[in-house]
Image (tube, rainbow, N blue to C red; front, top):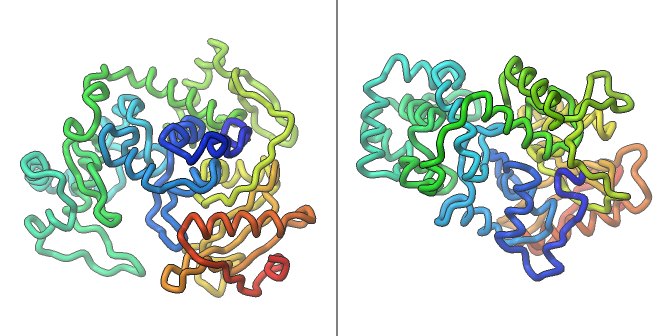
Length: 386
């Protein structure tokens, strides 16, 4: 909990409104902010900051990611992520491996239409930043076909995403939620561009160190998953860090797998926290770890047909002090100006103050999102109490 930034909750408010330093403090704990396209409540990368420091100007994240001096950049960290610009060299090995490990559609276009990649890169170099929709009008007359509830990517989009994965372009800004691509040397700080590329092994060791610092205590699978490292490489890097004393082998009661403790991990006497956690928060994104730590079985049900959902479409666990005690299905109804609680469910051992403290957190969230009220649907055992 302390490693994830909940050991000293919301200290930013003691010194005035949260600022860029407060944001950087959160990212120092989490290592990254995962990006997701679902916007039923708020974009995923904004909420982990709110969960740790409370209401803050969302513009802080936008400024850090898309304005100079840029503090964050987009790349594949855990999934699509905002990461500190200083770690960009640690992912160059992943960029080099794009032809082997990028998604299949990206690799297919890179293999089958190399001229398209060259033309797109030339356009971005000459005129960037440019979006996929702007470039598609020039290079791909065929519109993507409808497939289920989403549009399939066009070859132009796949090609641009391959260029993104391979580090040849990066995100300069977003228009709406659409990436606008530009050359890294025009986006990233010169100091980052000029940083020597570490060896693959050195970079992966550092990513394991960072994962361990963000997790506190973790299994090998947890450490590997944080930055999605190859299994064999992660195994070797963990063993090397154990040999140098930078990871401490430990056993955790109830865990079948061996665990590793970060040498500087601290254990507060207690954690006092109230936080709603987005499904992509690093405290809960690895569902097996969430169950091991909290006894809380959590599944995201966005892709489950509505009649088969157990708890709802966009369900956030509620952290109360050191336990996950409830889950709520939330929607920001911006047209009506209300935060809709479409379901509220307590865990069997939720303490008596759960509803009161959850209500306070919901009120804080509604205010942060600029919504004037809360509407609770009578669905779930906590709904009446809310």
